[in-house]
Length: 384
Image (cartoon, rainbow, N blue to C red; front, side, top):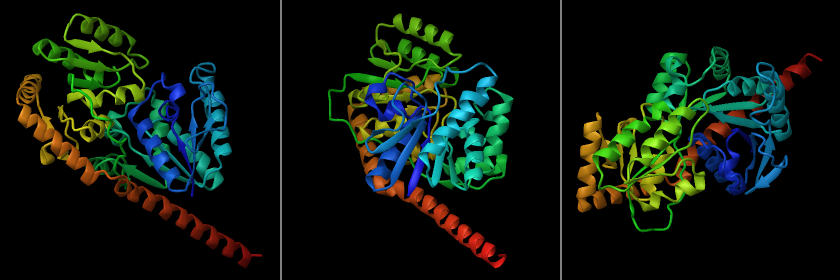
C-alpha cells in the first residue's frame, strides 16, 4: 500500500532537527501512524510545510515532500499560490494510492479535489470534538469553513476518535464514520517524580491556562510545571500567562518545548491536569497513562477516566483544587491509580490492536477502487 499523510506540522515530530517548530496533537498521531505502517512494510510519505528541508528527504523510512512556507505569498492571493499550487504539487510528487489528512480546515477541500481528479482515495480523521460540529469549528474564515464541509462530504472514509464524535458528525453533517483509536509512544525510562502537577497544551483561551494559574495559587506547596507556546492571535494571552506564572514561586513555566522534550516530562510527573473547554481525545492523556500518571480533568472522553479509575473528572475549579490536593496527599491512592493507568494502556492500546481498524479501512477502500477500475475497464471494452 502506498499512503501519503497530509499534515503540514508533522515534520517537527518526525525530525529532531526541526523540533523547535509548532506541533499539534494530530501531528503526533499522523507521525505515529506513519511509523507503524512503515514498520509493517507499507510505502509511506508525508506532505508537510517547507521548513527549509530538502524535498523528498527521508526520515525513518518516510519520504517527506514539502508544500510551501507558511508565511509565503501575498494576502488573499496566497490561497491560490503558493498554498493551493504548492500543496497539489507536493501531493502529486507523493503519487500515493491513498491520501490521509486530519483536522478541520481548507486543506480538506484541496485534498478532496486532488483525489477526485487523480482517481485516488481520500481518508479524513477528526482531531477534536469541534471537527464534528458545524457550530464549534475552530476555523477563522467563513470561506474555509465552507471548504471544509465541502471536502468532508467527498471523503471516501471518515474516521473519528469516539462514538460521541461519530454521533455528532452524523447529526451535524449527516455523514457516517467509524471509530479508530490512538497510538502512543512507549513509556519513558523511570525517573524521580519531582513534578507534582504537569500541564501540557498550546496557550490559547479555550485551553484555559488561567485555571492552571489559579491552581498554582491554591496549592503553593505543589511543584507545578506548565508547557505551552503561543498560537497566532494568542500572543497577548501568552505574554499574560508568562508574567503571571513568574509571580508564583511553585510554578515553572517552560513556554514552548519540542514534542520530544515535553514528552520527557511525563515520567517525572505525579499528576497531569487538563483545564481545556474543548478536546477530542488528548494525546497528553495517553502519554500520561503509559507513564503511570493519573489525569485530573474537566473533560472525560467517553467516560474512560471514571470507568477505569485513571484519575478524576471535576466540574469546577474548587473541585479541581480538592481532587489534586487529595491525590497528592494520599500516596497509596496515587500509586494505585498509576498502576491502573499502566494496566489500562497495556490492555487497550497495544499497537497491533489500535492499528487493525485503520488497516481494515484502508484496505477496504483500495479493494473498492480496484473493483471500480475493473468495472470501468470492462464497460469501456463493451463499448469499443
